[in-house]
Length: 189
Image (cartoon, rainbow, N blue to C red; front, side, top):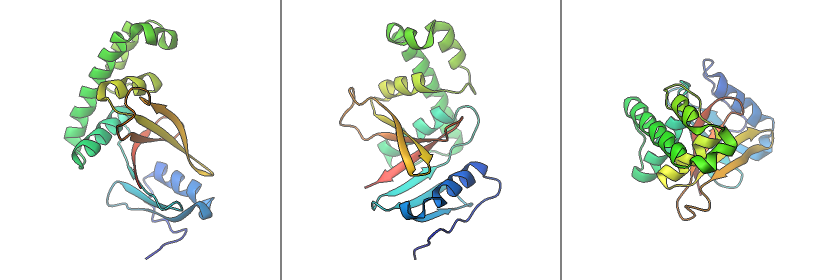
């Protein structure tokens, strides 16, 4: 069954509601859009024939690390982690990323200033990660990371990490809301 311009919305999920509204502004770009309030996947049957699924990640300040950890788990093992395992994996990844920031001090200082205090702050749970952490996570996991953002035309690729270092790996794809949150995005060919 094909649903056109139909959204089943969980009113407590403002982020997904905003995505759904943005997608409905361009109905020709998407044949199907729906949210399932009983799980964490937003599925879109894209006009190109690709299936895009978004695994929503809780907004705890650790979403970048949790989304990357879930993506790595899924690409490596074909399954998602439960919440307790996700938290542990995100914390482990955060620590590895902070250690890599310090190892790559010469490369990172022009972007973040004094690396060691930055890494100490970033090592604390709940501190938001961004571009430096995405670059270092790609190095730590030896995997490409692609970041997309929704806009009125659909999804826009806004950043790619690890292209030079890991060209043959499947990328972890993240969906950034443009303000302060990352979710995991899966794109099937």
